[in-house]
Length: 162
Image 1 (cartoon, rainbow, N blue to C red):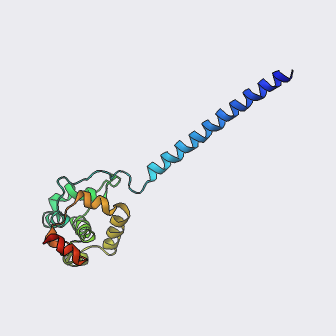
Image 2 (cartoon, rainbow, N blue to C red; image 1 turned 60 degrees about the vertical axis):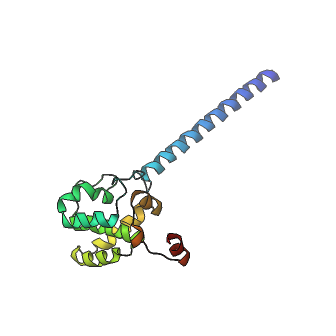
Image 3 (cartoon, helix red, strand yellow; image 1 turned 90 degrees about the horizontal axis):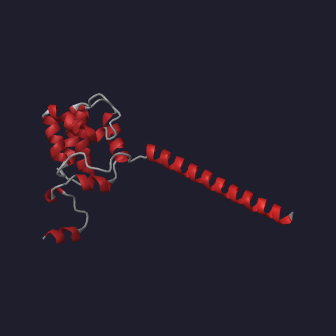
C-alpha cells in the first residue's frame, strides 16, 4: 500500500510540475507577445530611405517639391498606422530635425526657417516623436551627414580628419 501511495504521489507531483511549467511558459510567451506588440521601436529595424542619404538633403527636397511627401512621409509613420498624408512642411521639418540630432551644423538654420510655418505645437510634436521613436544608432545607420557639416566636439576629432 505504501508503494502504491508513493507511486501516486510521484505521478501527481510530476504532473503538477509539468502543469506549472506549462503555465509559466504560456505566461512568458504571452508577456513576450505583449512586449513585442507595444514595443517603442517596433517596425523600425530597417531603413525606410535607401542609400543612406543626408537627412538635410531629403528635407530640402521635400520642402521644395511637395510631390515627394508620399515617398518620404514614412519617417513620421513607420508602422503605417496613420492613413492620411502629412503636410510637406511637417515631413521636411522631421528630416531637418533628424539632421540636427545627428550633428549637422547647418540644420538649425532650416529648423528656424520652417518652424514658424508649421501649425502651433507641430514642431514640438515632431521632435518628441523622433526622439521617442528613433534611436541615435538607427539614425546613423540609415542617414549620413557629410563630414564638412558635422559638429566636432573635441579637438582630437579635428586631428583625425587631417
